[in-house]
Image (cartoon, rainbow over all chains, first blue to last red; front, side, top):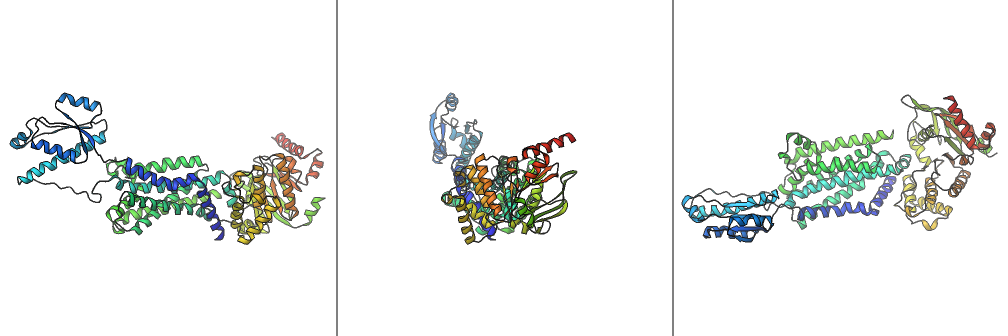
Length: 366
Length: 253
């Protein structure tokens, strides 16, 4: 045991003396979360808007004021002619134009049907889409309030469960945890083990009385502890800075996190048995682990919208299950009664990878 | 004369009819030799002659296909754990962890070999004193010149007072002056009763050994004290002995 403790201490010294490793462990989680939380956001604020309102009646003015007071739009221009629309878009002065017809109120009252034209700058398709749907919802709400006062019509009252304000951070925190744990656990372990091989240190360790299992465990244990603290750091940052709640059991959340770390560590060991070069280990980890974690896990792109083949591929990716679990616990407050099947799949994958990696590691020694 | 001293003492490595096969390729073909306590045994051969394979077997890194082998009095098949505790190992490739200090390296390997904290302190102080290196105790290895690192690595391989030290081309890439000093250390260590099992490419170094064996194509072709071999082949030095053996090999082909 004492042999082992000395060996683990050495591994910690390696990590603490290498500022690159340290910054990946603790700088990266916070930096990523800030990036995803503040920069990469789907929410739109103060989009410049042009209004053309020849009618200038109570309805059209009401709608205009509702649009500008929503916070989404900023009334940038009032235009009076259709010909002015194209130039303001081309100059990039506005992102959206709202055009009322003549006699808007008359059309609405007499024919019960009035059309507002919404023009958006679709050179940025996402923004265009969002702006159009924001406008639609503001107008719809107004139309409904009119119907309500006249005592008729159907009301739709959407409620956004689990993330009422549709914050992007809610989506990113679980995905980020998965991504960073993959990065730290799998990538860093595969690199640290291959580094030991590259420098010829592995031979020395294998000649020593340390058992192969002790060597692997000693190399991996520090990364287990550090990636776990890194995950906690993300949760804390999410909670205190972005207000991402943890509705469900924290104990369950942390336990599932440990399970995922074990899985990623096994992957790291497995990669290190395939190659003895740090470069190759890094390449494999990046391409084979990071990309699927980002693209095929439901982190950003919903799995349900992918072609069937891709969906099957996603089902083979451990991060997909982990992200589902973390979202379930953090946002919906799910317990094991709901998440047992994902947990089971993840446990199975972990066990499989652990056995495989240990077998391969031992085989390489013989 | 020097080898009379060793012949009389007990063997610490006994190898009898050792074979190692990789499929149809025979890397070690019927090796038989003994190495004695306090002896400096040079294990020579061209690249691919099979010396690394044999050395890996003796260190417990790989198992032989057949043969009776004892290292430090323990059986290679059943007592690998005991063997590992009683041997030290150093290779050209490795010279300590660069991001750890001299003392941290010593503490690490002392710990791995099961020394107590007190023993580690005493041994490392001793070793540093022998090297005249007390001031560098807390210096990172990467700040120490290469030649010194090699000497330190040798000391660290001795920290647990092993019965046998295996040196795998220990002086590769080291300047002649340092090589000389290194061999002085080897001689001092052997005089203390530790057996040295060393592979090398440098034939002048072979002459520092008490006895050498030269492997060709997986077999030990000749074995004996360097002076005797030089005489037997009627040449000037070990380098010529080696060349003669290599020529013999190419005429066979």
